[in-house]
Image (cartoon, rainbow, N blue to C red):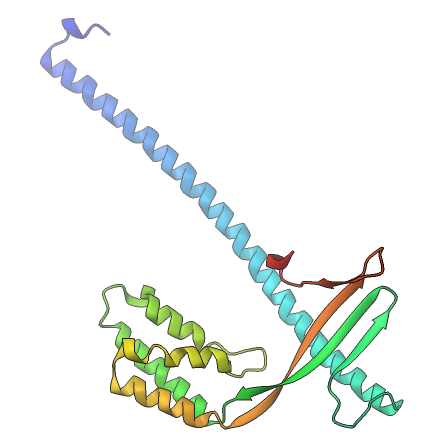
Length: 213
């Protein structure tokens, strides 16, 4: 194309076509990028949700089988006492440890406090420009998550106390006080540990979390 022989109108039209072409190329690149991203996120989401469900199913199986086998051990006189919850099973090069430990828990007042806190956070977040993406809101809601037994986690709730000065609200302080008052009971947590003996005869822990692999 000899631009020297083109009129101003022709040059403007050529420039417009060039810009349209560049926009189309940029659009195709963006669509390709977004397609790759969507496919990646879909596969990762499916994988992690499947893994999480498998972990829940496995935990439920362990809870059921560990409790049932403890009854069998009691019938065969393999328990040191009627209240024994911890024991270890070995079969070949595999070992399963069932360990119990006392943990701090909350009474029924904590459920009331949790409901009040959720309501408070929903009201509080409406006044924030970033909405539910607000980091304090995200943190507080995450700390209210319950464990596989449906109980509030003592350590997580304790972290909510540290946010009292940041919220600086009488209702939040009142809710924290109710949590503290409800912390009057103790419970028992059961944890499972798995080991496999290597070629040197050393027991190596099997980590169910892929982050530990």
